[in-house]
Length: 170
Image (cartoon, rainbow, N blue to C red; front, side, top):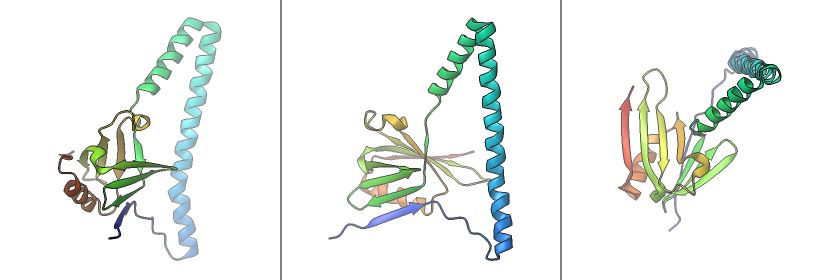
């Protein structure tokens, strides 16, 4: 018997057929990313200049602020967004996160928590059991807007009934 591979991915953005409308839609869509990136880069540059100024003139204050920012960024939860999930019938999963692919078995999934947002897509947080294997991900992957995710939940629940599926409404 050949195992079936089920694929769940984020839906593609549909652009208008007209070339001019498609160009205008893409400019409007991607311009927000450019503006947000420019604002973020300017804030980072101002913060670096401020810390450098403090470290030159008041070095203990600059060192404390710099160390505090580094510790705060290190302590942030490292969640990875899932773009695509491939599930085999034998219980192997592949989670595509940007340029990385995380291989896991369904028995390694501890829980799936769903956060229902009425204004946008549902968010799912996938937690793993084994700390060492998924340490780079802090044992959690985040999925939002994947097609037919309910089918994925039913399939992993039939393969491993010990998986806890939590549903929250916001």
